[in-house]
Length: 228
Image: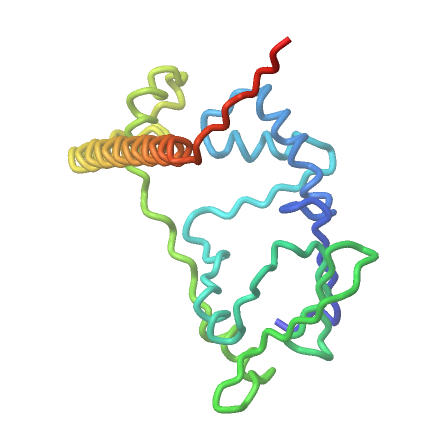
C-alpha cells in the first residue's frame, strides 16, 4: 500500500494491456500445445521454456498470495459504472480515489471520484490504509469441481503414462463426489432443455404475431389493368 506515486494503466485492446506478460500469452499457448503436460509442474516448466525472457512464479494452493478485496473495496469506493468504455486510466497520490479515464490517447479525460461519502465525510487516506492492511482476508480456494474430477479420472487418466497416474490431478472421486457430478450433469441438462423450449416458444410467438399483423392490414388495392 502507498508504494506508487502515479499509475497509468492502458488497455489499448479490451482486456489486454501493453505489458510484456500479455504479449507473451501467444508464445506460451503455442509452446504448450507442442509439448506433453501431465502435471502442474510440467505446465510450470513449459511456461518457463516458452521464451528466453519468461519468468514463472508458481503459487501453490494455500500460500495466501491471493486476497479477497471485493468486500473491502466496496465499502471504501463507489462502483465504477461504464468502466468498459474506457481504455486508459490514470491515478495520482495527490488525488486519492480520483481516476482520470480516456477512451483513447487523444480523447478528453473524464474524471471519476470513486470515494464514498458517509455521514457527509469522504473516505480518508488513513481509513483506506487501515482497511487494506488489516481487514483484507486471504482468498479461500475454490471448491473442487466434481465433474472435472470425475472426467479426469475416467476419461483422461487412462491415456496418461503410468508414472504420472498417481498425481492428485487424476485422483479417484469418492462415491459422494460421483453422485454430485451426476446430479450436476442432470441439472444442467434439465436447464438446457428448459432454455431450448423457452426459445422455441418465443420464436413461435413472434411468428404468430407477425402473421397476425400482416393479415390484419388494410384492404389490398386492386391492380388497374389498362385495356388496349
